[in-house]
Length: 211
Ligand SMILES: [Zn+2]
Image (cartoon, rainbow, N blue to C red):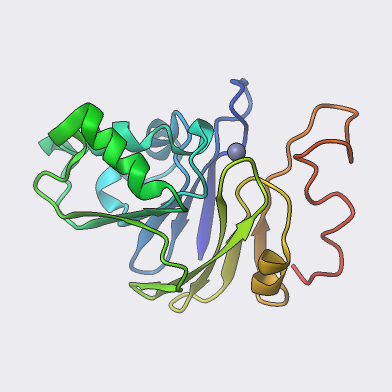
């Protein structure tokens, strides 16, 4: 599995980091985890991939710095020049169905699939098998429901875990312990505040859990 970091920042614009988004590539599939603002531009700037290549989008949670580019992505893929024809599946945590319904209420057909099949679904709780990759989810503690995703690539091999935001939970540790080759872990805190804030999830905790 190949992971490209398209954005590793926060909601606050910075020169060095964009809002969170990751490109993940297997032998015969391409997916994205999170779509912070600017992600779809970073996809074409920082990788050889195009929107039409992405078959699955996993949203960790519905804070705008993780999901804001979903509507622009769907809007862009209505343009024939994106060459979109393969199906696209988009999934996210509790509240995702309402979120997409709200987008439909605002934008109507502009965020529907056109010339390709678009499926949106709230995470079922069950592992998702998709084109040789198996995706598992675990809830973490955050100010909105957040899903961490563990991806197993049965083609190239390897596994990668994306925590999204928030603090670790037993469910997350149970999912990832000894089963994770690469950990992509959110850790955001003001300088000098290590260990004090709600975004200090991993300081001193990651050692020993096998990632
Ligand atoms: Zn968040």
